[in-house]
Length: 100
Image 1 (cartoon, one colour):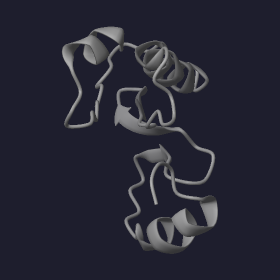
Image 2: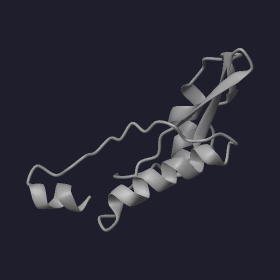
Image 3: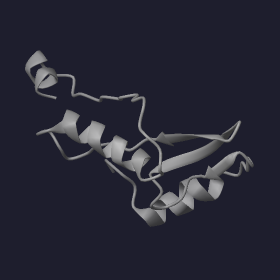
């Protein structure tokens, strides 16, 4: 199994086992929620996003940035930081990295 888990598997094996309730988490993990909203005090929130980009090679870098920024922006805040994670095949060359 590669890529995103189907919702029924995610619910059964992941979300049902989270088990930690933190009152500062305004929006936490659930199906269809791509960004968490966390109360960090002083009337401020932190919106955090993680979403793997699978099945794309063409425009992969563009998609990664724009999807992340969109998922944060729909929470009503301006995206400010990005923590990219890039998984490459062992045989990836500099041309592929440059293309991304």
